[in-house]
Image (cartoon, rainbow, N blue to C red):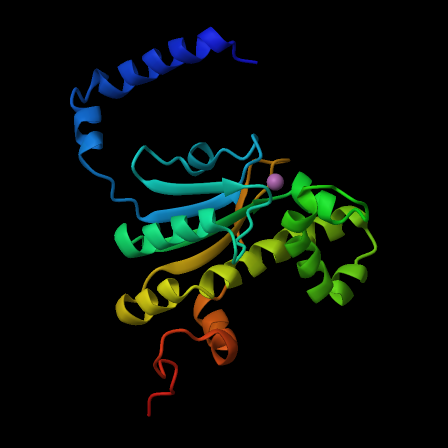
Length: 219
Ligand code: CO
């Protein structure tokens, strides 16, 4: 474990490295941010957003919470999405879950978790939606992995429910939403291949907030 004092030594070494061949690195960084990605991931200390992506400062706008959830009443995530789409004009929104996620595991456990109950309930809702598929998986570890993936998929759907996301996509063709899973056991980052236009089309009947018939087939 890094000692408290070591953190500040690390920081000075890091900034020295950054400026060694680029003296005005921080002067440029301070001017503005123009990230192409919004990353919504788990708070888990093992899933280091920038490090696992090889991203540099200024490249990724980041939001993290327990089990990478996008809940409709969470003003925090709503504000992050709104700012990222409306003002930063990000091209891609990523939901990144991970195997061995304590939040997902807790939601699979039928017991009272106190203040975490309402937060984790949306994962229980995902379980309920995919109960038949999940219960057909005999191996508990594989069932747990699959719930991690399905949770990512449903949080992608939740992102697509936002009016600002739909309206910007109709107008500009972005942001596109992606679902990822990071495997803490191997270090591998996996794209779940979420079909963004298909999901948009699938939920249009109920969640369309664009105010226009934007999926009418062209003839
Ligand atoms: Co987690």
